[in-house]
Amino acid sequence: MNAITQMIMQQLSGGASRTIAQRLGVSESTANTAVQVAVPLLLAALARNASVPQGAENLHQAINKDHHDGSILDNLMGYLGNPQTANGAGILSHVFGGQRPAIENNLAQATGMDQGSAGSLLETLAPVVMGAVGQAQQQNGLDPSGLSNLLNKQEQQAEANAPGVMGMLNSMLDQNKDGSSMDDLQRMAANFFK
Image 1 (cartoon, rainbow, N blue to C red):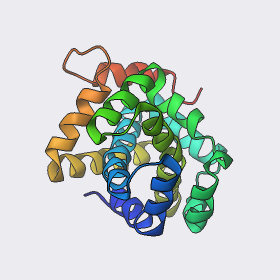
Image 2: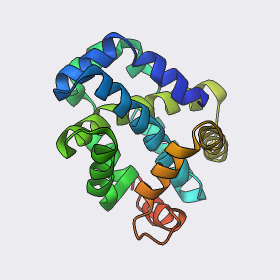
Image 3: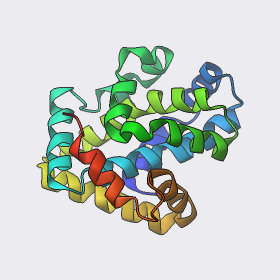
Protein backbone atom coordinates (compact mmCIF):
# COMPACT_ATOMS: atom_id res chain seq x y z
CA MET A 1 0.00 0.00 0.00
CA ASN A 2 1.38 3.45 -0.82
CA ALA A 3 1.98 6.10 1.81
CA ILE A 4 -0.98 8.37 0.99
CA THR A 5 -3.43 5.45 0.78
CA GLN A 6 -2.07 3.99 4.02
CA MET A 7 -2.43 7.30 5.83
CA ILE A 8 -6.01 7.74 4.60
CA MET A 9 -6.92 4.15 5.55
CA GLN A 10 -5.57 4.69 9.07
CA GLN A 11 -7.66 7.84 9.38
CA LEU A 12 -10.77 6.01 8.13
CA SER A 13 -10.52 3.00 10.44
CA GLY A 14 -12.63 2.46 13.56
CA GLY A 15 -15.22 5.12 14.29
CA ALA A 16 -14.85 6.77 10.89
CA SER A 17 -15.64 3.51 9.14
CA ARG A 18 -18.72 2.98 11.33
CA THR A 19 -19.92 6.51 10.56
CA ILE A 20 -19.53 5.92 6.82
CA ALA A 21 -21.39 2.60 7.05
CA GLN A 22 -24.25 4.17 9.01
CA ARG A 23 -24.56 7.10 6.58
CA LEU A 24 -24.66 4.77 3.58
CA GLY A 25 -26.90 2.19 5.25
CA VAL A 26 -24.44 -0.67 4.64
CA SER A 27 -22.54 -3.03 6.92
CA GLU A 28 -19.21 -1.91 8.31
CA SER A 29 -17.43 -4.67 6.37
CA THR A 30 -19.05 -3.50 3.12
CA ALA A 31 -18.04 0.07 3.89
CA ASN A 32 -14.45 -1.04 4.62
CA THR A 33 -14.24 -2.99 1.37
CA ALA A 34 -15.65 -0.06 -0.60
CA VAL A 35 -13.21 2.39 1.01
CA GLN A 36 -10.31 0.05 0.18
CA VAL A 37 -11.32 0.17 -3.50
CA ALA A 38 -12.46 3.80 -3.67
CA VAL A 39 -9.39 5.47 -2.14
CA PRO A 40 -6.89 3.90 -4.58
CA LEU A 41 -9.36 4.56 -7.42
CA LEU A 42 -9.46 8.27 -6.60
CA LEU A 43 -5.68 8.44 -6.20
CA ALA A 44 -5.13 6.58 -9.48
CA ALA A 45 -7.43 8.97 -11.31
CA LEU A 46 -5.63 11.98 -9.79
CA ALA A 47 -2.26 10.45 -10.70
CA ARG A 48 -3.30 9.90 -14.28
CA ASN A 49 -4.83 13.34 -14.61
CA ALA A 50 -1.56 14.79 -13.25
CA SER A 51 0.54 12.69 -15.64
CA VAL A 52 0.19 15.38 -18.30
CA PRO A 53 1.66 18.84 -17.55
CA GLN A 54 -1.63 20.75 -17.83
CA GLY A 55 -3.39 18.25 -15.57
CA ALA A 56 -0.60 18.54 -12.98
CA GLU A 57 -0.75 22.34 -13.13
CA ASN A 58 -4.54 22.36 -12.76
CA LEU A 59 -4.45 19.94 -9.81
CA HIS A 60 -1.68 21.97 -8.12
CA GLN A 61 -3.70 25.16 -8.52
CA ALA A 62 -6.93 23.52 -7.33
CA ILE A 63 -5.23 22.27 -4.17
CA ASN A 64 -3.97 25.78 -3.40
CA LYS A 65 -7.12 27.64 -4.44
CA ASP A 66 -9.58 25.39 -2.61
CA HIS A 67 -7.43 25.03 0.52
CA HIS A 68 -6.92 21.28 0.28
CA ASP A 69 -4.17 21.47 2.89
CA GLY A 70 -4.99 18.39 4.93
CA SER A 71 -6.96 20.29 7.58
CA ILE A 72 -9.98 18.10 6.75
CA LEU A 73 -8.04 15.27 8.41
CA ASP A 74 -7.79 17.24 11.68
CA ASN A 75 -11.53 16.85 12.30
CA LEU A 76 -12.39 13.88 10.13
CA MET A 77 -15.27 12.70 12.32
CA GLY A 78 -16.84 16.16 12.18
CA TYR A 79 -16.53 16.16 8.39
CA LEU A 80 -17.93 12.62 8.04
CA GLY A 81 -20.92 13.68 10.13
CA ASN A 82 -21.67 16.42 7.60
CA PRO A 83 -19.81 15.75 4.32
CA GLN A 84 -21.92 18.29 2.45
CA THR A 85 -19.54 20.93 3.88
CA ALA A 86 -17.04 19.99 1.14
CA ASN A 87 -17.60 19.92 -2.61
CA GLY A 88 -17.13 16.18 -3.19
CA ALA A 89 -19.42 16.20 -6.22
CA GLY A 90 -17.44 19.02 -7.81
CA ILE A 91 -14.16 17.19 -7.25
CA LEU A 92 -15.57 14.02 -8.81
CA SER A 93 -16.83 15.87 -11.88
CA HIS A 94 -13.30 17.17 -12.46
CA VAL A 95 -11.57 13.88 -11.66
CA PHE A 96 -13.87 11.51 -13.58
CA GLY A 97 -15.79 13.81 -15.92
CA GLY A 98 -18.46 11.98 -17.89
CA GLN A 99 -17.14 8.63 -16.64
CA ARG A 100 -18.55 9.15 -13.17
CA PRO A 101 -21.76 7.08 -13.61
CA ALA A 102 -19.82 4.14 -15.10
CA ILE A 103 -17.21 4.30 -12.34
CA GLU A 104 -19.92 4.43 -9.66
CA ASN A 105 -21.62 1.45 -11.28
CA ASN A 106 -18.36 -0.52 -11.40
CA LEU A 107 -17.59 0.35 -7.78
CA ALA A 108 -21.09 -0.74 -6.78
CA GLN A 109 -20.70 -4.07 -8.58
CA ALA A 110 -17.26 -4.65 -7.05
CA THR A 111 -18.45 -3.99 -3.50
CA GLY A 112 -22.08 -5.13 -3.45
CA MET A 113 -23.38 -1.61 -2.81
CA ASP A 114 -26.04 0.10 -4.87
CA GLN A 115 -24.88 2.79 -7.31
CA GLY A 116 -26.27 5.65 -5.20
CA SER A 117 -24.31 4.51 -2.15
CA ALA A 118 -21.17 4.09 -4.26
CA GLY A 119 -21.60 7.65 -5.55
CA SER A 120 -22.15 8.99 -2.02
CA LEU A 121 -19.04 7.18 -0.84
CA LEU A 122 -16.92 8.68 -3.64
CA GLU A 123 -18.33 12.15 -2.90
CA THR A 124 -17.47 11.70 0.77
CA LEU A 125 -13.96 10.41 0.13
CA ALA A 126 -12.92 12.81 -2.66
CA PRO A 127 -12.29 15.79 -0.31
CA VAL A 128 -10.41 13.50 2.10
CA VAL A 129 -8.15 12.24 -0.70
CA MET A 130 -7.63 15.79 -2.00
CA GLY A 131 -6.79 16.89 1.55
CA ALA A 132 -4.20 14.12 1.91
CA VAL A 133 -2.66 14.93 -1.48
CA GLY A 134 -2.67 18.65 -0.63
CA GLN A 135 -1.00 17.94 2.70
CA ALA A 136 1.73 15.96 0.93
CA GLN A 137 2.14 18.79 -1.61
CA GLN A 138 2.45 21.37 1.17
CA GLN A 139 4.76 19.33 3.43
CA ASN A 140 7.13 18.53 0.56
CA GLY A 141 6.95 21.96 -1.13
CA LEU A 142 5.94 20.36 -4.42
CA ASP A 143 5.49 22.24 -7.67
CA PRO A 144 3.18 20.74 -10.36
CA SER A 145 5.94 18.47 -11.68
CA GLY A 146 6.82 17.28 -8.17
CA LEU A 147 3.16 16.61 -7.45
CA SER A 148 2.88 14.58 -10.65
CA ASN A 149 5.98 12.56 -9.70
CA LEU A 150 4.66 11.92 -6.18
CA LEU A 151 1.30 10.69 -7.46
CA ASN A 152 2.99 8.55 -10.12
CA LYS A 153 5.15 6.87 -7.45
CA GLN A 154 2.08 6.29 -5.28
CA GLU A 155 0.31 4.65 -8.22
CA GLN A 156 3.34 2.45 -9.01
CA GLN A 157 3.51 1.30 -5.37
CA ALA A 158 -0.20 0.51 -5.44
CA GLU A 159 0.27 -1.48 -8.66
CA ALA A 160 3.13 -3.48 -7.12
CA ASN A 161 1.24 -4.17 -3.89
CA ALA A 162 -2.21 -4.88 -5.30
CA PRO A 163 -2.07 -5.66 -9.04
CA GLY A 164 -5.59 -7.14 -9.03
CA VAL A 165 -7.12 -3.99 -7.60
CA MET A 166 -5.15 -1.80 -10.01
CA GLY A 167 -6.28 -3.96 -12.94
CA MET A 168 -9.87 -3.40 -11.86
CA LEU A 169 -9.20 0.34 -11.52
CA ASN A 170 -7.67 0.46 -14.99
CA SER A 171 -10.76 -1.16 -16.47
CA MET A 172 -12.99 1.28 -14.54
CA LEU A 173 -11.04 4.23 -15.94
CA ASP A 174 -10.89 2.92 -19.53
CA GLN A 175 -13.89 4.84 -20.86
CA ASN A 176 -13.73 3.83 -24.50
CA LYS A 177 -12.76 0.20 -23.74
CA ASP A 178 -9.68 0.30 -25.96
CA GLY A 179 -7.55 -1.41 -23.30
CA SER A 180 -5.79 1.80 -22.28
CA SER A 181 -7.03 4.35 -19.82
CA MET A 182 -4.32 6.88 -20.72
CA ASP A 183 -6.16 8.39 -23.69
CA ASP A 184 -9.31 8.70 -21.61
CA LEU A 185 -7.42 10.32 -18.74
CA GLN A 186 -5.67 12.76 -21.04
CA ARG A 187 -9.08 13.81 -22.33
CA MET A 188 -10.24 14.27 -18.74
CA ALA A 189 -7.05 16.16 -17.83
CA ALA A 190 -7.84 18.68 -20.55
CA ASN A 191 -10.99 19.55 -18.57
CA PHE A 192 -9.47 19.12 -15.12
CA PHE A 193 -10.35 21.93 -12.70
CA LYS A 194 -10.96 24.52 -15.42
